[in-house]
View 1 (cartoon, rainbow, N blue to C red):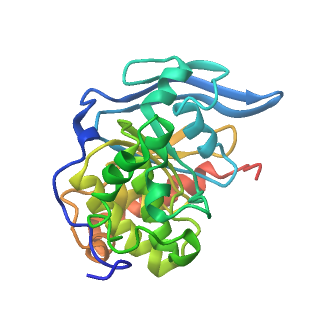
View 2 (view 1 turned 90 degrees about the vertical axis):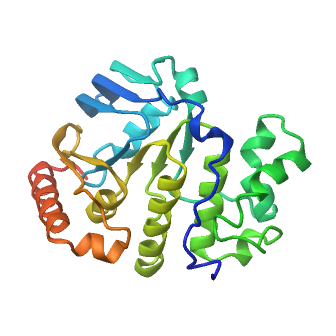
Length: 276
């Protein structure tokens, strides 16, 4: 199996996988503004434990802002957000692992140390942190690249290291902000299939922001379509089930194509009057 294209091999779940079976995301009457600029307008969403919610919408509509609000990186202007039953921003942040668009790997650290960074920040000793992260390198298709620096890794491998770092943080909720946006189309498709298998092997509650409707539907249980700014939910669609394991088979299935067209229709309707 190649480190770049090999499939995620299911194995024993990481210790954090079952730590918070009751973890869920609840958003009620959420509104957020930057001064006079209204970014989000009275938004309601619910996500059950170990569910995957995709967020799509026009550029600049507030998807990333919503993700940061959920993760406790910002405090909403109005309304309530709870993660695992707690609403305090600091407690929400403690329960969420945030993965931004860029992999944000530190260029001077080896892949193993980048992957172990969240553990080191929690006070875990270097050797123990490396051992904890290192046992997942084979499962993530990274065996043999533990000592490689980020510049020596392909784009897909860098994203795997970034996701591994997010996963070993031990948080029950993952907030993923367009994790594959910077990749070419072929690598992005490979990474989508890999991430779907990874989440099947190690379930978490996931909120995924994507500019790609097909990606969001393939990776998520449910997709919320947001309008132009100020963001509001203009459609919610469930992904077709059962979902084909093979990505190409999944996205060309007539049921999947029909749901994708409904999502695109909602997206076009919601984009009217987009402020950019």
